[in-house]
Length: 159
View 1 (cartoon, rainbow, N blue to C red):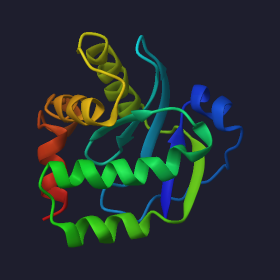
View 2: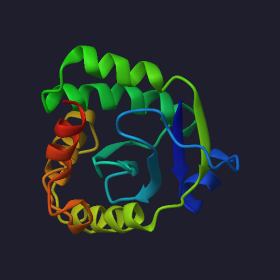
View 3: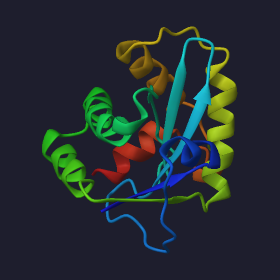
View 4: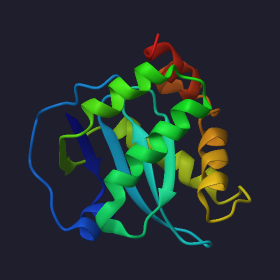
């Protein structure tokens, strides 16, 4: 099961959420989701609670955002060289989802930093460019994860 912790902006777009205290049973934990208004088009930023791994995808159509996220997450994990059997296991645990409100300010702080970096990165509104942008963001060290890079923390979690 996966828990998506959505910002108020995102909840307004998807029109529903559940109050829950449950947590995800996946390696990367709960995923925080925010809707971004950018110059090239609207984006959705997903951030792993455990590793702060950022994943950016186009926001439209909003009704398929979580299904498209799983496809893009699989590609991103392959891109950073996670073993396919571990990826398959992680994705299979994410078939059942619960959507709730955000609850961890540490993750929200990281997302704010990501949004600032996105504004200065030259990217196109396509999956390949967003994959590169997500990889660029995953190289930013954060004090809340002992000044490690989210990409490296993710690799450690999968070993």
